[in-house]
Image (spheres, rainbow, N blue to C red):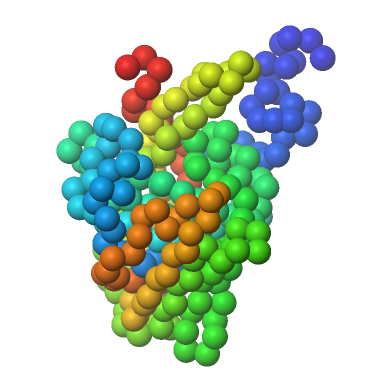
Length: 246
């Protein structure tokens, strides 16, 4: 394989058998379970990178079931998202992600810089309750409980929120271990169709773990919940701040 062939084929690792296909990536029947809560403002400030600003000490803890995603398959994800502002525009910063599928872990980290780690999130229906659990190995790190479809939400409001920009911090080390890439990346969700949306009574408990530190943003007060089903496209990203040149 000559240099020209390498450059033509090199979009993901491994070179001759990539972990994922080229994007964008479509998701069908993506099911979100979200509890929004108030946290400690000092703890939030300690994890939010400039130039992002959090107007309020608010965090969204999400469980997402993705049964049909192009290239990534069927998997479940869990993590924390922080409402932020960048240059005066409202959006969301993805702080942590835990999931159980290799392809979206590799693709998410390599393309956008999603903070993905392998773990075992799950969502189950237990009678009239929806129960989300996040295990890191054998240790329980989060438990979310929510009633099943108590009150319908405005689907247009959900679509509007999903259309806002999202931010991640992409970090790739050089071969000497020093950072080669350190960028704030912005991406959007597109082709959004909200099929149904609900809110219900909800609760969230977070537990300490050295390698899954979701409890470092503690739950002080549960504010709201959302449960919705959607089709969408995860678009590719753009760099909005390069820390290596700042």
